[in-house]
Length: 72
Image (cartoon, rainbow, N blue to C red; front, side, top):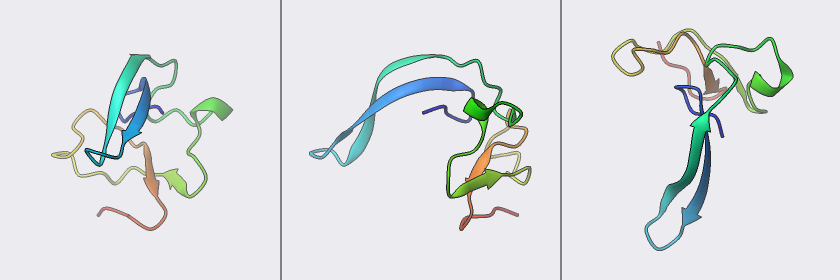
């Protein structure tokens, strides 16, 4: 996955902890708000948003949010 900061991360689900655990990460070639390239577009069920509260993601200039979870 590519997180909100633009890092490409490989994660695995640990059922015993009920958590995702990162086992590899590297800088991505995608900017968090870059939807001009196919590989940087939002996943199905998500859409581009510029409405994240600044205190939650101060370096984010948009990104993707669930179509069911809009922030205002």
